[in-house]
Image (cartoon, rainbow, N blue to C red; front, side):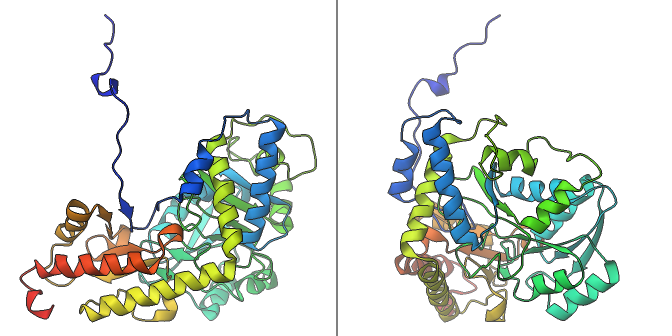
Length: 389
């Protein structure tokens, strides 16, 4: 018996256009779309490795680092997290993880799978760790690695990082930071903040397709990798192989895996747009659009999940769902009438908040105003709030 041809493939693909104002991915600029249409090259052709080298320069700029090992994992932000864990951790290594949302939970899950001794600093969703709390935990647990999430997209919290690297150096600890939902939207300085490992995603502020996870290891982190007593458990995520493939080690490039050529083109073009705008202008745009959103939401009588503005990331705003309102009806209204995505909560905030993303290409005042207009309309259909609008 032969399997018949699938009828669903008898016509070209048809995908609707939507405005993605959730926590990511975001819409891509036309320049990035067009970059993906460039001719296919072999993953070790010199013309493609030149593109890879240009990507590295763009990543050094957005990470604000001169580290040698700056490259990409072929995969999403989760792959960046997994690469961090499998390269830095050996069995029984102590890792201290700040857990104030789903990404701290995921990091702990991954670390345990590598047989690490996981210790947690637990904070309520939406809260962040102070320097005093972090130093006390470092003294108590004596970890090899401290892991922090700068922008916790499940809660909208922004973890302060200034001074944390100095604490880690003082106590002989490596500092690894997740910037998937924050990089480009808020200041970040890998070198001057003394951060040892950082990774991000391509599909958020950078505004490229989800497919690669930019990552950087400084010399301290690479020394930990080089002096391991046990092999790195993942060949695919081995940073020494990835560093060679990306031309970071000064040696001839060897075949490791087939890189996602078209996605690397897209990332290169997206990083070019970041460079053209400049980081300070990019950070300012995200801050001003977020302030516009906060003011508009509060004018609608809505309460922000994180009361302290200093603890909010401008890239993902969380809004408390008013009593009696069906949050899903509101998100469906956005999508069914306007083809606009806003999201519900995730992990500890599921069913408690809406999440609105202001990231990269989509972070403009016109989109803020559109979201506020639709939110007002949607809530006007909820009898409990109708009299307030």
